[in-house]
Length: 399
Length: 196
Image: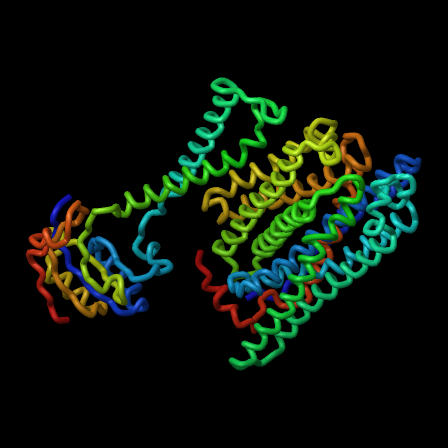
């Protein structure tokens, strides 16, 4: 049984090439966007990609968290994959902290207008919440807790492999996992589910606000995170690893992707319809450039890729059990939500619809970094948590 | 519907039932159905039942609901009785979405339930023969339909060899009927218990 992942040279090369493209794009961007207006685009591209990839990686920690709290057993056979992805959180979080430090303290780009609230009544009113001190401290605490809990859950899982457990030991293992996942659930709900996307992304359009925004961002990154897990599982399967994972597990991952694409659309619509219905200028300002302005095409493309396509593709049972179709749709969903993040950031920063070659290039760089980090982590430990009490449940899993 | 001859075998363990189903199928006997007190995972595969088309029906009911909602509302608001509601356009699509969604769910849910009831031959006042009273309690009941090529004695002997606890032969109505159980007693004309 192949249980120890060895990073294939081709995967390593691919990730380095992607990383190289990202760095090259950054370098080109540094010269192409050297003027006052251009630097906004330069930093907006980095901000968009670093938040997106951090939150997508964090979705894996959340996956471990929810499946553990729900006492799920089916995911144990491939649990090491979300664990490995979650280990990208500390690195990506560190990158985002550096970017935020540049934006807030280095005063780079004109992204966060709330940094200079003087003379603006609305921003002055929001300044107890949106100010450099609060945002930076909240960001450090949030990313610190995310990274700490991701590492903690991973280490607990790795420690399991070396244990010799009796019945009581197994029970206490489950209990310990439940407690730590419970702590993560609270942290995640208070950060990702309420304030963090407001601070990092919603505050780009500082005059505007929406309480649905964080949930919407969460749904976006959660479904992309599930797609990323599915992609890595399919990749490992295609290389002959993960022998216990079969189409039953892929079926359940597909169901997750299907359900949360609909959930994303539900939140998208909940945010849109309330603003549309009330029709108040301070709220509709957000949708003005997106629905009626230059970003109209992206806005509807977003809905088609992220809602209609997964809805129709994953409706049939057979498609969820077909690795090729799941991999294709997972790639489509990740690209779609990257586009979603772009249309969240770009109208408030770049202002005009331009082909996002720079943003895409930086995104490929982050993708390469993520692939490299995950591959390294996958190679660190056996791919099957052999001592986990629910392993058998996962092997005989039947949908 | 027709009155047919069946041989009924009882099993008290899932672990015996599964190999028995496989052996009975391999031997070429015609399994009418297997009645279990709870859903048994994988039994449909073991029985070789084809995948249900219920979800396709559900999809069709769903898009019927979507079409009904959208066309009905747009007809009302643009043609039949246009109203000015808060200065909104006469075809306010976002406002229609929740109702469209609800009607899609309603159509597909009600339609699927009714289709399911029809496929399972369940409806108010409709009765089906119960092969063994404990099939809803704690026993797994395998019913084999007798044909010209499979005499009752053979089937009984075979069921006995695969581990059935209680075997009997019944000549009963195979389909459903509207009425009461007690008036259909003639259908239980021959019910001979054979001690295994």
